[in-house]
Length: 426
Image 1 (cartoon, helix red, strand yellow):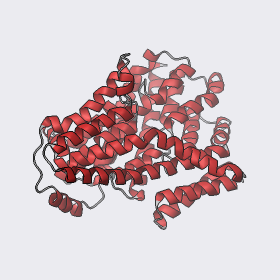
Image 2 (tube, rainbow, N blue to C red; image 1 turned 90 degrees about the vertical axis):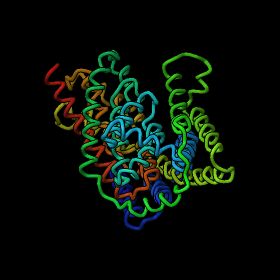
Image 3 (cartoon, rainbow, N blue to C red; image 1 turned 60 degrees about the vertical axis):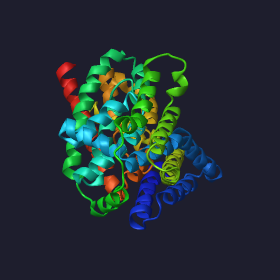
């Protein structure tokens, strides 16, 4: 069967299984992955490909998600996240905008948009409770901030390798990337405030008030250190060559240190049994998130096995399109198929670079055109799709409407800004 037909069929099948039949995402993704392998004529290697895709995601994100879940739940139960949310509301006066800026600022230094989201989603949760916002609204303004900077600002892993593949000086992309990404982040913020206001929070607020009625007010040290210390360790590793931070500054290790600090401060005010119960609950919850992510990794691996990304890229490069659209659509095709933004920007240049003389575009414009394409189309094979869904407690339809469609709006906005920069400065 043709790879493109397999790709479209897989999206339709997952949508039916998850949204219509409401089958658990992990089961839906694994079933679809197996069917893709059979349809592609690779039945003998399908299981190996599925487990390989799952294993790659698990090895990268299992500790991060579990540790982030523990920190988040402890901060929520002890009142630490509530205190941070109060500070953000007091300082910014616009807490949703403050969340957007938090994600925007930290995604690149942390070298992972997912990590930035995991760290700050407890704060988004508390702002949602205090201000009466729907959960999809607070989660989306945060996630759009992380995506904007991570997809466009050097030295993010998304653009880092492409800069050198295209022979561009880092200084030539730093400032344009910051300007374009900031506007794109604001675009995502306005999209969220306009189109992501659905959802009933009344039951959640009642439950939260019940479970927190005996909560003590923590110190700012107890509230901030489980988040601030891991962030500081990771940033120190990124910006220095001190050997000890090669270990302490690894995201997995840094977040485990954050877990220890969260547990330590919790024990000072709450019983051993209470804290142990919170940790166990957080680990169980993180297991669901990790399984969904691994299912996305399996889907991405089996789709990549079909060769549909290369086929779509080759097809698009041969169409009579405006030059600036060609790198963009090639990146969109690859992103849609395999789900990882970093992988997209590793693969897309190999297809686009031979076309650069024909396109007649400056390498910087080619870079930002491709980077704009990494916003589209994020769906079931994107691990961040499932992290966003599960940590924010959303329905699949809400994720498609906010994360997927909002990302598309941001990507198109980024492409338009790239086009404006091309017309004005080149």
